[in-house]
Length: 248
Image 1 (cartoon, rainbow, N blue to C red):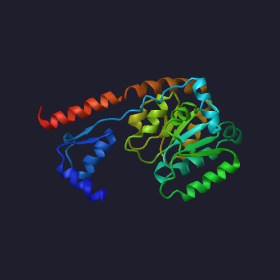
Image 2: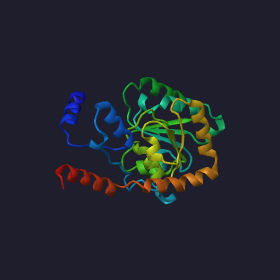
Image 3: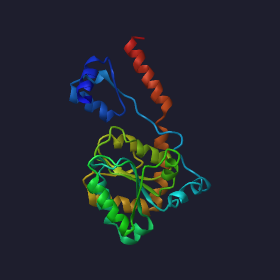
Image 4: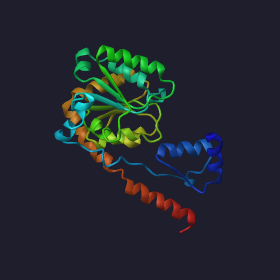
């Protein structure tokens, strides 16, 4: 139904708004639309995603059996598109001592075709280097982000990639894939590699966990990059699009 209705909506629309330049160009190519008929209006992270004090983290993380600065985080749906299998392969290739010191923490809904992924997650949990939190409430999630030592997001495809922006806004260094819209969101603040480069991902994860000089620079650049996105700007650009369609 959505496929049919999206085509009809595109045909009727005076203008199409996308949340990234990548998606803008993808929509133009797929629907044979002129780029002038499409505008990219980027999203932003919520203000609750910010660096937290140790006192703020201590009020939430122990209840989730987490310790600030002592884990690498992935947040998102558990499904093939997110490339979690590659993340597990890359993390599993790290030295055992490193995985034990900074385990991989996964949070998010169980998505489609995820049975095999959950079996691998359970095995890694039994080995002691993965924690799966499942769904995390909107009240707790900003603390879980801000308490991470590193954020990993090797997704195959993202229309925008909001979790990367949320991590950077939280002052957390990011390792992500260079696919689809993620380079737009991450800018020069993240370590990036091809989503199918498991060896490269393992190398970047290790650097992200151990290289304190890079981590300090990434934290600073990440906050600056996140500040370039705002809901006020998103609203203003959306309003401009409507005024253009109305002819004034």
